[in-house]
Length: 339
Image 1 (cartoon, helix red, strand yellow):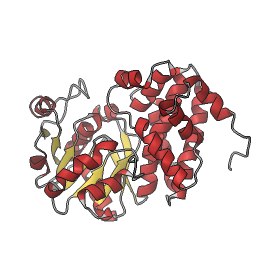
Image 2 (spheres, one colour):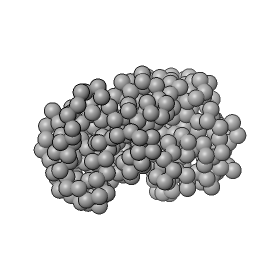
Image 3 (cartoon, one colour):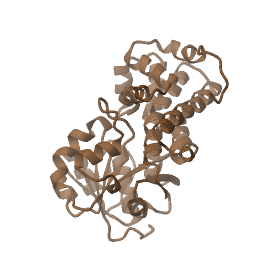
């Protein structure tokens, strides 16, 4: 425990794998931590048994961490509020909590997605739903697979905010011997990397489920980073973000790990499951399924071509057979790599 966060009170909205894990990170860093969740049994187990067997089986959680179904009590007096709920549910979940949000507290988005219908990034949705200025919102993103962090395996992450002071506060709150935050002011780039990498991981998973190997995986990851960069630059992101932790780092982890829900769901699809069957077999939330459409809509709105994302949308939502995914990508017109 670093002790650098001693005296800070943190609330976490969400008791899934990432919300619970980030709560443990905050507690290990020295924060007083309370989680909010809808399931009373899960909340009781976190508080009394220091376990969340549904999402993190076998993991011992910090003893001081508590959980409750009473959002108002959890939010009371918090210095920072981390939000880890499905991206398409953020606005509806947060708006009723607006009047209970602690004055001056920092909101921390842990979500990786783009809102359907509005094309808003998660920090924008959080700010609108809670009526907060942008400099009171931060984003945490990087190669952060929940299970590995819950096991206290070393990793680094990016804390992004338009406010240097806000980013520094969140970094101090979560820094520990195994969790290393770096600050960044490129909120747009960090968030787009986190949203689009889930879609690329679906494409990698589908190809691996079809029995394709590492050449294909490397091709999809590399060209996927091109898509992420192309969209980010069109929206004002900084070029240095894409080869960093929030870009290539997170993309590699999500595309390669069997612990990635998006990758796993893609594998199930590649092996012949329907989307409904793959969702059930994967468990949890695979954000790329819904975000693929909103990412593609966002790209089209700024005139950016994203062939991998488009192909994933066709497989997931438009009936394209999975065996046509790779040929569709490779049949595109020949051109120079940097175009």
